[in-house]
Every structure is written in C-alpha cells, then in structure tokens.
Amino acid sequence: MKQIRYTSLFILSAMANQRVLPQSKETLLQSYNKRLKDDIKSILDNFTEIIKTAKIEEETQVSRPTQAEQDHYEMHVRAANIVRAGESLMKLVSDLKQFLILNDFPSVNDAISLQNQQLRSLQEECDKKLTSLRDEIAIDLYELEEEYYSSRYK
Image (cartoon, rainbow, N blue to C red; front, side, top):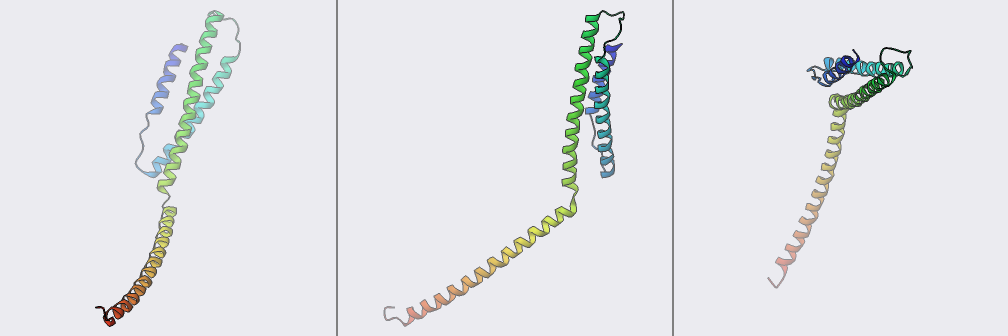
C-alpha cells in the first residue's frame, strides 16, 4: 500500500514540474499564486508526514527492521519532495522578479526618459564645443590666409 503511495508521490511531483505559462498577466499572476500555495502545502504536508513516520508504533504484522527500512525510504522520498518544493519556490521568486522587471513599464519609461535627457544634454555640450572649435579654427585659418597672401614668399 505504501509502495503505491510513494509511486504516486513521484508522479505528482513530476506532473507539478510540467507547468504551461499562461498568456495574460492576470492568469500568470494567478498561476504564481497557485504555485506558491501548492509548494508551501507540499512542504508542510511532507514535513508533517516525516514527523508522523518518526514516531515508534506498536507491533504490527511487519517486522521491525522491515518497517524501519520502509520508514527510512518514505522519509527520503518526503525529504526529496520538500527539496523539490523549495527549489520550485526559488524558481517562483526568480519568475516574479523577471515578471516585475519586464512588466514595470513606468520605471522603464522613467529610466528611458532620464537616459534621453542625459544624452541630449551631452549632445548639446558636444555641439557647443564643436561650434566653438569651428569658430576658433575659422579665425586661425583667416589669420593664416592673411599671412600667406600678404607674404612676399608666395
């Protein structure tokens, strides 16, 4: 009976890993919420079952070493499920960060506007420097032409 439970635990955890991303933001947020609740419930349920398994029970039809081995195996499976749920929660946090970064349009627009302002001020500064450099070169060229045309060595 317990062997069937272990197999179904593995199947359920494999099915939980096959998630399809929904299309709209609302369904995506609902999916995140459901994943959060499912993973926390999985951690809690598996931890509770580990604690229950740790209790020493009365004599049963199964020998004590066999029961200990079976309990040991169940604890490993449940610990693996807790780890899987924890990793899923870490993935959820990563997905939420990515969702926030990709869908935080006001801050993205503010950053773009600020960058545009900085680049425009840099462009104006470069234009002013180029204009003053052009004027200085024009004055120097005029003086050189005056010198050249008025020189007796031409």
